[in-house]
Length: 396
Image (tube, rainbow, N blue to C red; front, side, top):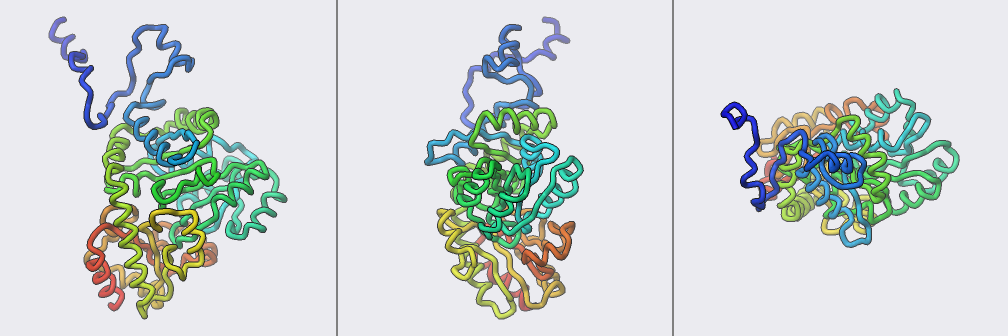
């Protein structure tokens, strides 16, 4: 080869060397051995990679691990598709299995972005959203029985930001009884604490940006389904054609973060319990939302369908309302004000003025997302330091 050819070509001399850590396959496309192999891969006769928008070895490796975690201990063989963000995961799932005229039955205390997606985007394409109290199983059954064209029951548990818990097994059973699919956002719990597919759900969604990555340096999402054929025909196809695929680098960052997931979740859970207990005894606090507290209305349900802890998320309402909440947050010294969650450091958010700003106030208030509510993503710092910081800020 001439020099100008040599600089263009890949040097394959060391391709057989096996890496100890998952490598980043930073390539847009993949080489076929010959034309017949390319044809067989495109026809799904032979498995293989074609183009990184369709699939990528780095991304597939991480997706497969998450699928194994969601199905762990069961006879399920889940299939997962990673996406460019948590919202992309939700969008891809909905695009992949819904059509104009279908309805989504869901709760009022969803993450604000999910609510806005359902109302402002999916609504423009003829998919209607119906809100109900999913804790009321009799009322939910009535909605499924009387509302025509409910194709999906979409649940978020524990919910963002009031940490309400919903009975996944019961809701999945009701959905299936009336020919609907059941999807669960499992971002807050992670598959280490809760496995919706094992409880009967058809799909699980994660913003892997949060606890699965855990270090605040990656944006990605994943959809996991119990039915591989439905996932391939619906979700994977939607991901491929809409271009919502995860990049290899983001998947690689997620893979690195997941190595410490078990250790991190133990500390997140123990710290959150200590802080929730402290806040529940503070005279300036009106209420605390944490499913690990026996006073939480969903404590027994959470104890039944979650294992290994109750998560690292909590929220609390100050008696001083919005003014007090803002003053408290501005007085924090250790905790960080940031619009995300699941990182190793403690993050604080005011939902009414940020994540749920686009949600109508009446819906917010009806579902406990009050003006004085503060959401806390409890980190893995020393809990005494966190309690001291929260205490001095609340007193101010």
